[in-house]
Image (cartoon, rainbow, N blue to C red; front, side, top):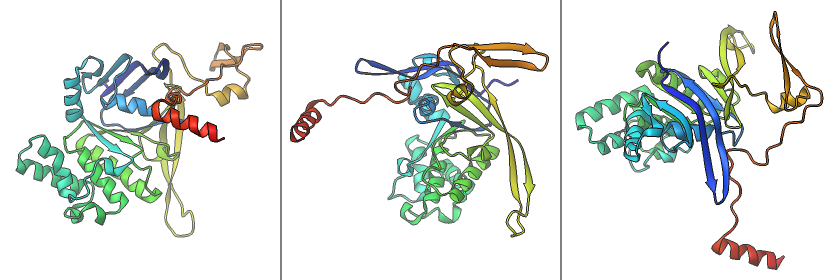
Length: 330
């Protein structure tokens, strides 16, 4: 089997705020093969955005190992990490303006990163033209951002993210500000780019329908990978509503993921449903393994804070003074 493009082994990320430490990643393991289009999902504070920032070289891990396209990110110097971001990674954000310059047209926006990288004019014009065509904006290449719809602006942002010919495209809620139809168009573009350039795409999303648009969905819970959902089949059904058109009926399979030590996560709602405490009985049967609750086991400890949510800062300076004045008025 080929080496994965992304290998995360026992990742730990700890944020320190004043004297309080918040653990965002707690021994996370993940493998992503080259050419995958996959999504990371999870509740707010689960650690998925922290993981995306680590993969993109925007944040460093506290412990563990993370290798992307042969680069051991923990061992890279700051200068080497800058080169890694420029060479191997493209970013697409939920806020389109983060990638775009409003007074430039589409073509100029896409060429700008190449100008900054010193790419020759002929090469950058050819590559920019190819990218603009790949995202379906050739007729709009001379338009400025104010003349484009939100979906078209996001397509420009995707083309810009590929200006450095990255191996990995990271999307942080790239369809979060788009309607459902436009979001589907964006996901189709991700797959088109995947086929054209062998691009690996990792998307963080809250979209409950995300599994319909990617090859694999990995759920993160409490800073660890907990489950994996894959599409088993997609059969055409219909006509569904009398218009004569067929629709795809997707069938998915969700699997619980084990970490490198063989541990698994049982969701809180499942533990509560079956009255599972801090111990569980595992029995081997001819049909497979059976997990049973243990009578009298202590209930799971409730977290005071989510691992990816730093505690609220105490007001200081002018904020402290304003808070004191407000209390006096009360």
